[in-house]
Image 1 (cartoon, one colour):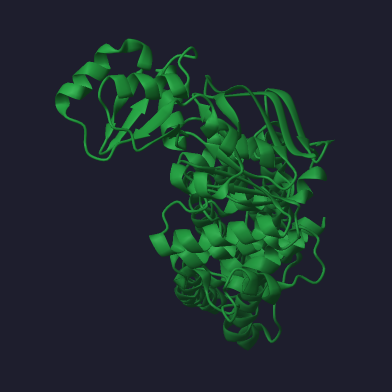
Image 2 (image 1 turned 30 degrees about the vertical axis):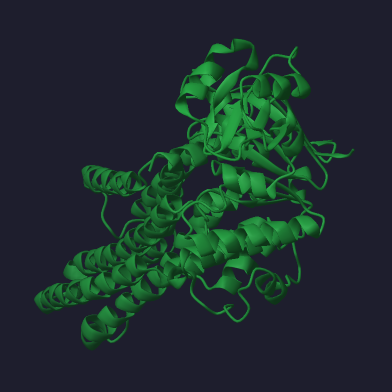
Length: 300
Length: 248
């Protein structure tokens, strides 16, 4: 699979603190890659290093297989944490300015504005735009030079729910059109819905990386559905059966994370012997939130 | 080079639209009117004292002072006000960071910004300063002498000395504005420079209508420019600009 972005052992210190501690990432062509992490984990620093705004102390950065020079960075479009638009200029003037900096001779301003749902707003002064419109304009700016990779730093931060939905929909459309999208977020639900691959950064280190499905599927035990909520004495019994790895109850569902020696049939048999009526039993898939909490807790 | 012109054109337009720029232009125009009438009164008084061969040095010196003051107000004051206003706003809103995430380099950004504030100030300075000199001649000198006076040293001070001083200060102010967390510190640096220049020049015993006065002003501007270039060569990077903006 072709690699769109590759970071290998990237380190960066700022003000005497090591913000990136040798991070390595692989983003493949066509990925919608979610870059997760709590505030201060190093997400924005990674994006700034990627865009050439900060210089890495060590490590290697490759964009579409080439070392990240200013020429290679022409293949990147970006939306930064603050939209960076000029309030005193119109939407069209903002786009034209950036088009000239990218050397685009005849920018298709109307086309990109239509793509982000801002048709007819060319002459609108950006200072009068809502937060959602500004974010869409920032996305339009990122698309002006038809980049292969989009780097978005928390693109839905500060937007109301409808604004968030619009931006997510746009990201989906861009991914469908063949762009590689790398975006940072601390909204787990958003990442789970949009991304096919993710990485989790915590305290400057990549703690988790891979496909969303494969990460969720990995070793997260079983869920047992019951016809009614279990009595409390039954829960006490289950807690005493240590090898079953009873984790808790969610309404009529029991969660187990047994060791490798206990399979699904053995679990079902043990529960029947204990007198539980089972409606269904299945391998449980962890949510990203659970993985996230687990990784963060390990780092504490 | 293309990026330099792009930023210069953008800054020029943004500065002229900016509220602070409009206020600066208004203050400047209001300030020039009393200067004109004060100087007109001084010239009329000197010329009335006659004879011409005795009062000539003071008349020429008064014209030199008039041209110098007006040019300094336009080129330095207007230039700095125009530049710092937009720089502060763009830095705080992350617009400079967005510009630097494109192929734009820090030097093209710096010189684009310098051009964006210096060029309108220079153009306004030349029009207004020579306009005031022409008006003073028309109002006070021509009625007595029969012909206008545009002494060479005065023309050199207004047309060369002050513009170089303005260019040096514009370069320094924009460099400081790009590198420090609070670009208003840049405005303070101008006050310090103007105070220093206005204290040092009289101590050199120079008259406003001397050739050396023009060259001292130009030389001061070139010195500030060279110092700015030296600092920029050591300090001006995308990283420093981005990190200084972060702390706002």
